[in-house]
Length: 355
Ligand SMILES: Cc1cc2nc3c(=O)[nH]c(=O)nc-3n(C[C@H](O)[C@H](O)[C@H](O)COP(=O)(O)O)c2cc1C
Image (cartoon, rainbow, N blue to C red; front, side, top):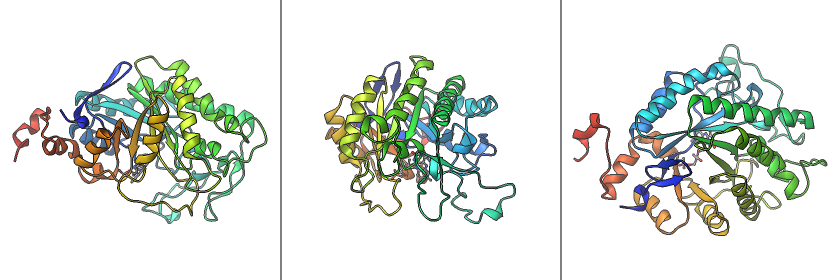
């Protein structure tokens, strides 16, 4: 059995293999509601054999959406459609995860393939918030600085989002603390220049995330696994760093977070990022080997042998795959053949298992 197909037990859940579908926004929801697109999109990857799916950034409040077409989980009515997706994923022997998100100063933007906001009826910008009133860049709105009362409300939004996620049946809740969105904005001294308990030193900058983790941990049952996605570095001097990420990993592990999903960047528009295969693996490696936490790595991992090597080298425990799974929903079924592992295929597809 190759490492990629070695199961991983996390508390009460078992991933049947080490491939996780990385969260990827589809910008295809209406008023936050999931629809047939999401069911078919996630369903296909479950059929395709991934160990777990982390559903795209799902907003805990309407203000926290990146675009007006983001998925949402800010009202109970959202649960029914989400639970249909979870049900189908489970029927196909896959774990269902959801990424809870607030976009902070990167909220209220047009959808990527429709940059002219006028094109969509009913779209209007909404006011955005952040730890400090510093815009992402000149094309973005200037955010308003959050008051402590508003911070408490958002922490509660995450908690209520998690409650709804549990009701919908998700096995994994991932907190989105990466890519320059609200929680990352608190972590990084480049976007957080607050003078109160939520800004300044490391302990203060991580406070918002820790309070979200604690409030979620209190209400989710043991069988639900809590994961956190971070950007390990801002790729910018004086920004959030790999050392801080490692220190954070130790702290959140003690709070009951099972997995740190290690990405990078997204906070600084001009940051120079060396996009090449495995470019983020060293961050997961450092965090894994200097803290007790289980880590996931992501970024330009596109083939089975590459993924297997990362695991063999003990650089990470889980392989998050993004765009390759958009190109090829059956990446995992094919990876099993390439690595000469025999795995179950959906019986409907069994006749196509070998060429
Ligand atoms: C279309 C698209 C949407 C994305 N949306 C999210 C998201 O909702 N949450 C997130 O944490 N990352 C998001 N990402 C980043 C991916 O999860 C992943 O980290 C990134 O694409 C690098 O992995 P890859 O090279 O395997 O695609 C998105 C990426 C793409 C291409």
